[in-house]
Image (cartoon, rainbow, N blue to C red; front, top):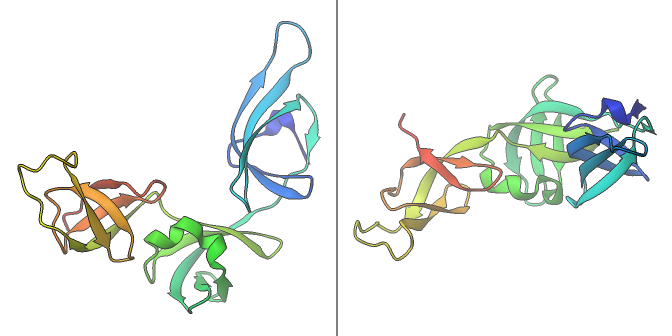
Length: 187
C-alpha cells in the first residue's frame, strides 16, 4: 500500500482487480477545497489509457512487478521463447503479450520481461535497435513526391519509412516505441 503522495511515473497500482501503470501524475492544490492528484494511467493488459483523479493522502494498493533481463531465443510457431539470464529457465510468452515488440525482436536480443505473481505482463525493448534492410527500392535523388522517404523491409519483416539514401543491406537504427527511422549505423 502507498499513499497518493508517494506516486511515481512507472509505478504499478492494483485498482479494482486490474493492473494500471502510472504514465504521468500531477499534485493539485486548488485555492479552496482539498488537494487531489490527477493521473494518467495505462492498463497493463489491455493498453487502454484513462485519466483518473484521486484524493490526496488516500491509500492505493501497489502491485509488485518483477522486471527481469531475458534473452529472446526463438518463436516456436505459437509462443515467443525467452530465457532468464540469471537461472537459464526458458519461458513461453504469448504473442498478445509481446505485441508490437515482435516487429523489432531478433534472436539472442536482450529484453526486459515484466511479470506479476508469475504471470507475464509485457515485454520491454531497448529504446532503439539496429536492424538490417533486407529490401528497398533504389532511391532517386530528384524524387520528392514521397517527402524524401521510401518503404524498406527490415530483417524482422517490419516495413519502415526510411530516407532515399538508404540502400538494401544497410544497417539502420529504429525507434522501438514508434517504429520510426533514427539514423544509419556505421560499424
